[in-house]
Image 1 (cartoon, rainbow, N blue to C red):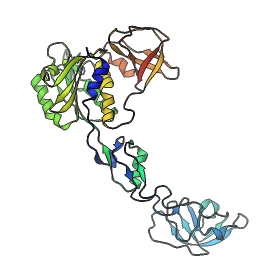
Image 2 (cartoon, rainbow, N blue to C red):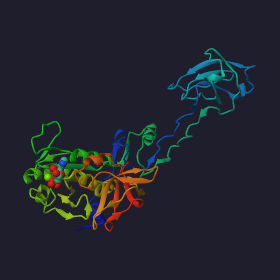
Image 3 (tube, helix red, strand yellow):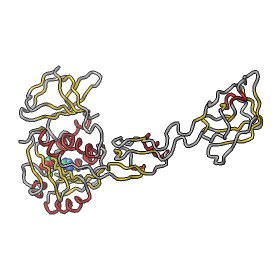
Image 4 (cartoon, rainbow, N blue to C red):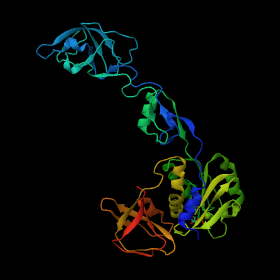
Length: 397
Ligand code: AMP
Ligand code: MG
């Protein structure tokens, strides 16, 4: 039997980072920058007002007060977006709005709250220091500066900055494109009435969500029955267009193991010393990496967590590709099969630092996984854990 760590290594070795590509800003959120972003222009692009108020020459109103306001004729009105070049003449004021270009010659902006807000002759009731409420050109970004570095994850704020610089695209490491294939003649898509012996397909839905949650793209989700030709045909149709193939089902020891039967040449089918998730396989089909997960739903998702999620995220350059690991105090006694690494579903109380296993260990109990917030990781050499001991866990929250 192969160890969990060994299989993790083999699977990770199949992943490759796709070539960087330029994408529109709308598609870049959450991806990793492949290149530095250098500002093509300065921000602000011109001196502008930081307040709604009046552009003035500071010296002319230095002594203004509520008792002795200074009155100035308002000779221009400058809303944001005015594009003609204006000059403030001595002894006058321009009404100006936040973000509007400062007229040449103005040395301060008096907020409207410190005036009578008039549009003909303004009464200014406080003095102003030179430079007050003026945003200077380039004080945020100087043209030519590196404002975002390769390796950074594109966040909403990074997109805002990029857009403010007038750039329409970013060079990023693309999302991995994944084919999620579920197999089983008993599977029926939601919405179709069940015949006796049939079940609703759930692994494809679940793994598609898991792949997306990990930051990758699922581009095809075919479902096939346990027929080698049908399975092979579906695989051949899609495999050239994806970076990774994930299948579920058809890899254990029974008859009608469609994945095993179809891929004996290209996939290494192994037993991994873990519970759940013992039957595993990985390899390449026409050059595309394939990971064949077991069909039991808990096995499938736990296997995704243990083998796929980390290298998938790493292939997209994402920082911290692994789930956060921690330890917590176990609230109960537990047994675990010696010789296998066990991943039990758990509920972590992060404040108390305690964890309780959740649901039975068998691999069809999806209900419990659905409300768990962590996986307990119990080592191969452990067969008993007592209440009060420290256990390792993967934080899924
Ligand atoms: P298999 O590995 O194909 O023998 O499947 C093991 C168990 O998982 C069986 O009970 C299957 O019915 C179930 N199973 C396999 N694939 C799926 C799926 N896509 N959705 C729900 N259950 C599945
Ligand atoms: Mg099956």
